Image (cartoon, rainbow, N blue to C red; front, top):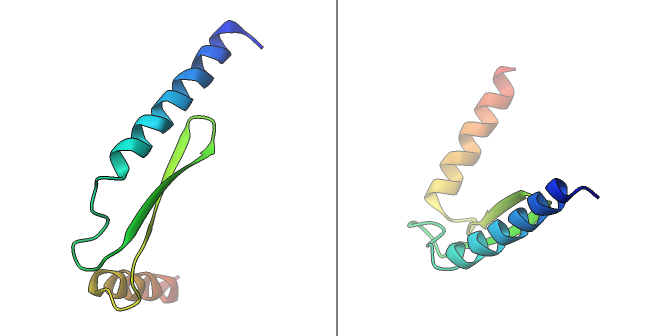
Length: 73
């Protein structure tokens, strides 16, 4: 493995740890007690997954919009 690639992988791991530490203190949704959990999808790619309540007004509006967009295609 090249030194450059090793450095990129170290930087990606460091960034994932930083994002994880900051995401724990961020409220996931102002409308419901949603939870947010960061995870590293692949080296250098961090995804933050937000899980809403089924009664969340934002989530319901988001789902309705996605449903309408799906029907328009």
